[in-house]
Amino acid sequence: MGEEAEQSPAEVKFYRLSEIEQQNTFKSTWIILHGKVYDVTKFLEQHPGGEEVLREQAGGDASESFEDVGHSTDAREMTGDMLIGEVHPDDRDKLAKPAESAVTTLKDESSWWSNWLIPSLVAAIITLMYRIYTAERE
View 1 (cartoon, rainbow, N blue to C red):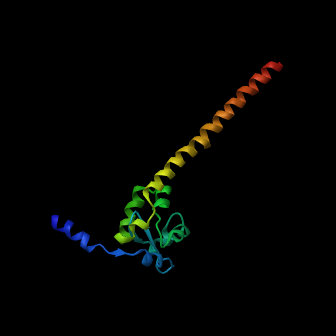
View 2 (cartoon, rainbow, N blue to C red):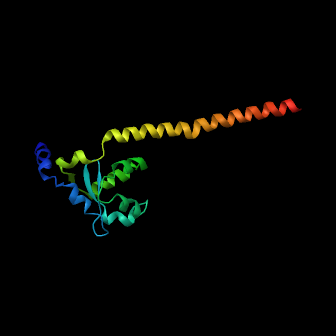
View 3 (cartoon, rainbow, N blue to C red):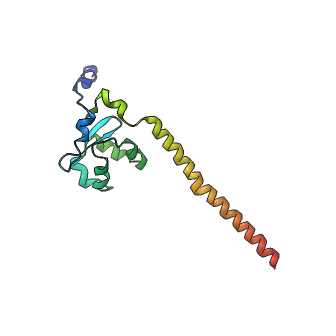
């Protein structure tokens, strides 16, 4: 077992970003997820979100979009069949930075507050004011 673990890094195929960017046709569609390169060409028509979703990300880093959708465990397991390699180490610093996704997560949490809690409080206050106003008129 230990031997296989030592051999696997040597077997990894690395792709430069320029190579990946060229793979954005119907004949060859590649995407990057967390530094790994996937050939999703055969999956285009089967993708539950439609092939347009994958085509928009073709040739680039789809990590943030993939995580934003919240794919299931089954979907994550399916990606293993499409894995063809990894982004070349010299190009990894050109990919989206993890700090940006953390900021996005914080923004998403604050939008929950502003989209649900604040309107609910405003509605409750208006209801209370309406009841007080109508009670005074009777």
